[in-house]
Length: 247
Image (tube, rainbow, N blue to C red):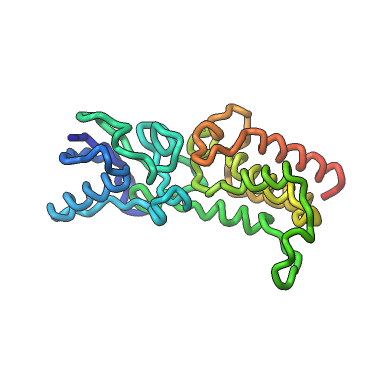
């Protein structure tokens, strides 16, 4: 395939960025999207140009680092991570626009790389269980109902990629926070800090500059791990309970 790529280039956080256009030939439909970018970078380096900076690590849809806005859609036209998106989702002659996440709490570091440490700070504020457990306990010593255990497991699949923020017109991270709140709130081990956790994490979310949720639902539609929208309802319910009880 032959493609026209319109890619955001930005030298550093303080520089003024812009869209640069590249022509790329020899793209196989079996390539992943990141392999296509690797091919482009080989072409750029061979021509003495600076390669396009982009994040990736596992390339297996697990880590979420590969996050890109592709033709205006978070992770592209398929409900998957960018690294698991394949070029068979595009056609010969297509023009593809590739941008970094567009959200104030995710500043651009270079080209397609953004700083998502705001998510780390939200987790540090309360997305953990701090009770000392010693050595690993017997799994059945703290029983959990199967439905709650399965729900906790399902929402724990959130990889923190930020697609929810990028897709949301308000730039809200409520789906991300809701997933973390629900994951720990469904388990017995998460109960001692349940109410302080939600207050602290929502407070950090707002401090980082993420927008408020207006239940548009774009976040859940774009989520590569299909985190359900109702985790935001759980988040709001827990927050109301916590504030009512003076946390």
